Image (cartoon, rainbow, N blue to C red; front, top):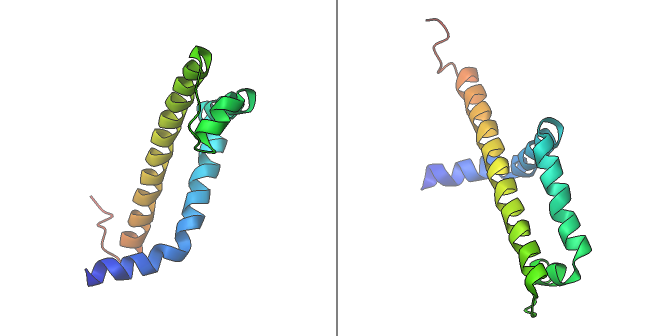
Length: 110
């Protein structure tokens, strides 16, 4: 527990930077990420009921078209989250590699 606390303290300040780096890398390298993100935003912009449910978290009646849009919005959200989680994992692996390498804990010769 003590080691876990020190790691949290160590990375707490850098976490927002890492989150921003992940987002910027996705926007730069993954055209599908940008496209899905845009389409997800457009769904809410074009459907006030969807905005009310998804962002204002209010319960309102939805018609069939609203529900179809909500399903699309959820699918986009899920796919975007998966891409983002993968990107965060890749960054975590790179950070771990750099830390181990700098500490001399990696064998570089085969």
